[in-house]
Length: 114
Length: 88
Image 1 (cartoon, rainbow over the protein chains, first blue to last red):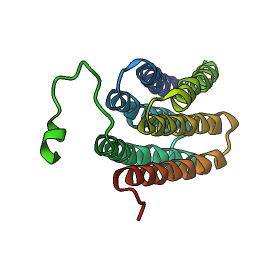
Image 2: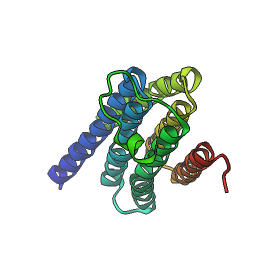
Image 3: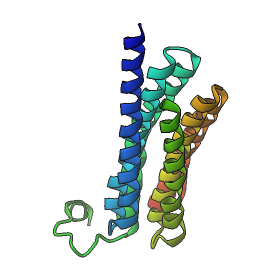
């Protein structure tokens, strides 16, 4: 029984570390990338993988209690809504007239509606 | 062992609020600021989840769910306003 508890603790810590790494990489991308669309590409990973990994870590620690069910609800809600919000921001930015960075070589979406 | 990792996680999540605030203040265009606000809200939701586990109280998770819903609706509203000039 104690071996099983230790294994669940280790897997939970592994998921917490995954969440930490994804939040760290997303923040580096938010600071360093040159464009709205590149920053959006970096920060959407925090909403999907980072938050879901941390919530899965909490669920593995507390089991299927009220706290675990609420945590997995928050994680699944962020997993569903973060890509939709990112898509809406990118579409609004492109149609609002925010340009791409100088290193871009191709703009297919601009060709379709102009 | 798990409690030290939880406190390290809380420390790094609070440090991760600083780039979002930098992007909200400095960001050259309006969609940059919206991206920063979205990332800030998601980091706050993760902080509330971990803090709820540390305090062993389930009420912070309700706060996290409501904040994520409000963030989603606000992002969609600002995007529609930028796109079409009116919300409805």
